[in-house]
Image 1 (cartoon, one colour):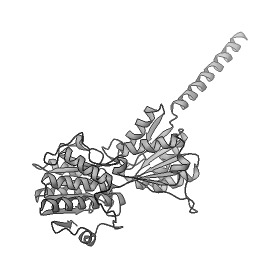
Image 2 (cartoon, one colour; image 1 turned 60 degrees about the vertical axis):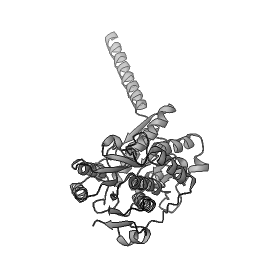
Image 3 (cartoon, rainbow, N blue to C red; image 1 turned 30 degrees about the vertical axis):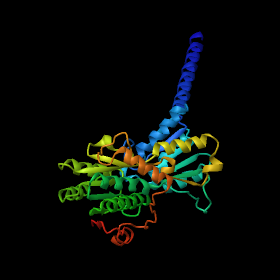
Length: 372
């Protein structure tokens, strides 16, 4: 009898320990700040990475837990994959979900509607509404004045001495952010060409940018550009950078302009990058959320950030230009920040047409062609 009692007590202790372990394990898997990535990998040297680093920096500075979630199927992720990732983040205790990329819209609408207690930060997105048209007050958007970064990159490249430039853009001509980058890029090129009284050629392509992934076709196209004399190419579209990088590094001196974050560490061919303050802006919005300002400043709104918020520009820590110096750039940035440089943002819904560029960039010093 004593042995039976001892056995029962031992089994009870084991069950208690298992339950305790499970509870502790559940606690370990509780993450308050979640990042649900866009297509591609987390550490992509671009949009996903910049967003994650902002959330990570804020969490670590404030003693908060954080985790990232990559939707299944990588570049082929569906809305259901994104919904599953967001639901898993909430199951794991997320109070706020940071999700970069306009492709998150449908999934975020679904999950934000069913989880009104969770806050969502839609990076590079827009304000969302539920199926009945009611604004989703637990969603806030962060958008950028990409035309400013594009302008500064194009202006700097021409001032550095490049006269044969290119640009390839994701989204097939309909992605607003890529179009703003492209439009600003062309305006900056035109402004510098006029000041220097130089003839400049600019090739633009949306052809192999229907998505944002690398492809053999895009690499072949850009290789053809470099072979034909193009000196520097603006790689604007996530993992498309890899195709441009491969093409540039197969040439003697092909140069690249990166995008979103400082991509100089990814290749010595990068002369500069048209950056967005992803990390800074994510930290800013998280600070407002945790500061109790969600209802007054963020709910169902979009924060449009630019140079005035230190959210657009060129990185100076890895400067690789010599004729256009950091001092020159600082002067340009100050002018953009103050609004004394006029940069238009009246983009077309679809920029993959020659008529748009011919009608908008009227400088006699710049010839723009779409490479179809």
